[in-house]
Image (cartoon, rainbow, N blue to C red):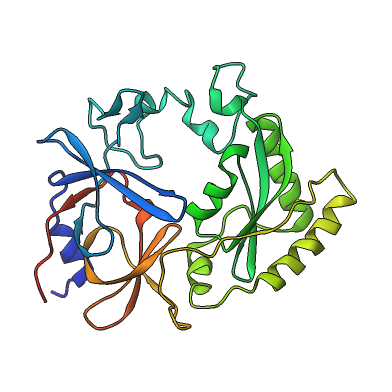
Length: 286
């Protein structure tokens, strides 16, 4: 009986041993991946310049970070849609579904994030653009963690609920998506994003919006300092996160780590999909 190699690799990865990936983010243009070693009871930053990993299929709650540092989930609950269980997430957002669809201005559950000022923005991924929303203080950070080539604020609203409503209105007015498909993001990676063209497109969108609402008329910020080699026009292949990964790292941008496997094929591993998974030791040598 024939069995796909990728399925065999998944089956060979221990589900609940090794270090637990508990965070992925960016500090300016420096990506940060944190893992928790339960035996040593400590978190550490994982090196991203070398790739020789085994990643579990299942995900467990990443726990929480607070003033006293990292706290693992006491129940080690399995998670799917979110990285945290509802109990661990309650310190910053009591109702997790409000991450995508806020139900109030924060007055019902006293959520701090829902009460903060939010910005609706336009982000470019090469020639493609999308609409998004984030707390105003995280605008640039949000662009970097998504791997955008440029970002610009369109409107600011006093809370998350009003921001979400404005995001929907602007998305419809400009006929732009609120979610950029991974495939489309990866298709743009081997191309050089031209700032003049992005600014020209932004100005055309701004003209459309200004006739319908008050807009900020801000300057487009180009994001071009990602630690990534020139991919020379090649289109990366998105690999399944679970399983074994080994190869020469070409760099990181937004959600993805790019590497060449032993056949010199260009691969993209979604680092943003790692939190919650367990990371085993080095894979076997080819």
